[in-house]
Image (cartoon, rainbow, N blue to C red; front, top):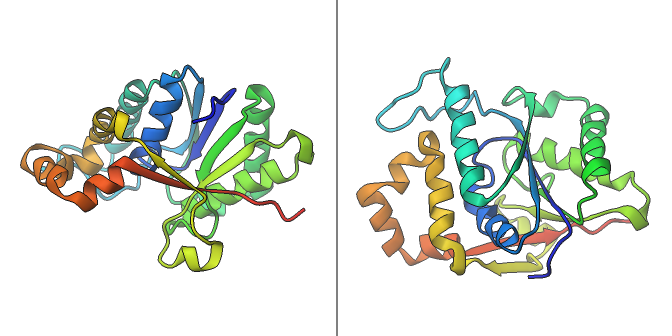
Length: 223
């Protein structure tokens, strides 16, 4: 992997990085690359309360914040920024105003690489809205100053419309730490990633293929 100057990760929810990106983040931080993570919400409208339940609607935001902070510690991220938007409302944010906030961070950090969701191909309205605002922010920068943007997509049939991912990254070397990062989000993945369920998952080749391989689409600008 080419060493980046600075990586900026922008997702709407705690845990959005877990399965698809945390191995890549770990690889960057182990290379000595600074990584900043902007998380737009605290996922307070999430339906999972743990298994067995240990959260309620009032306590979930604080719990998810702690889970995210722990995941960042595991991934080696020292700069976590919380934008304080409300879960499931990112799609209703003014795209210019949200892009302004992203542009401010980009101007400050000067990242060489941004990782976000591919707008229109990321299933959840918050995912698509976040990715669209990031693309809008970067797209209005002068071409020569734009950082590379790697997008995550997983909607059904997305390959038919945007092609195959141009980056398939083997993160086997950090798979154990990636699992620890996923386990940090106990309220969301606790039942799956602990005890016997984890053992069964690690014995499932399809599950381990998903953990060991991360895929990205490099965003192609029309101009």
